Length: 103
Image 1 (tube, one colour):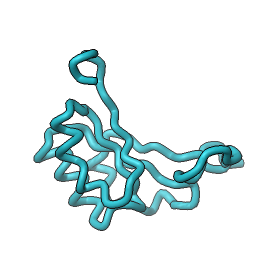
Image 2 (cartoon, rainbow, N blue to C red; image 1 turned 90 degrees about the vertical axis):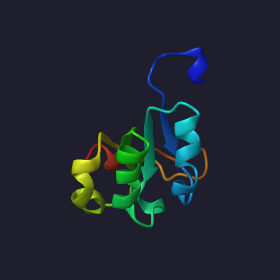
Image 3 (cartoon, rainbow, N blue to C red; image 1 turned 45 degrees about the vertical axis):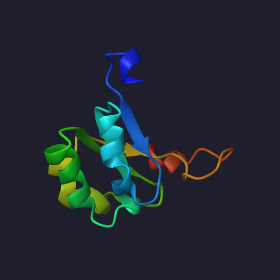
Image 4 (cartoon, rainbow, N blue to C red; image 1 turned 30 degrees about the vertical axis):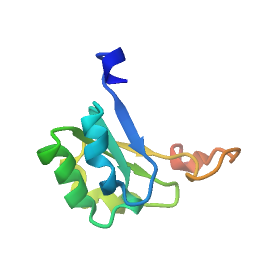
């Protein structure tokens, strides 16, 4: 994709153990790497690696059932946070409105 555009490429890794793939996506031209907090064994280490070693912008995605407490300690390492409105893994789910629109 990098050869087709100069626009920023944001890669959202919805995989287990995303650390295994970070360097490959950086080499492929990603500008932003977003990982799921729930999928990282050491979230701070992953985010630091993305920013300091790969020189990319790190992001974190949170599943609907994961509280904001999961990223409190790493906010200084993030460029942004994605709050998922469905649980990853299968299509056809109902929109989880409490994820983004608390009453």
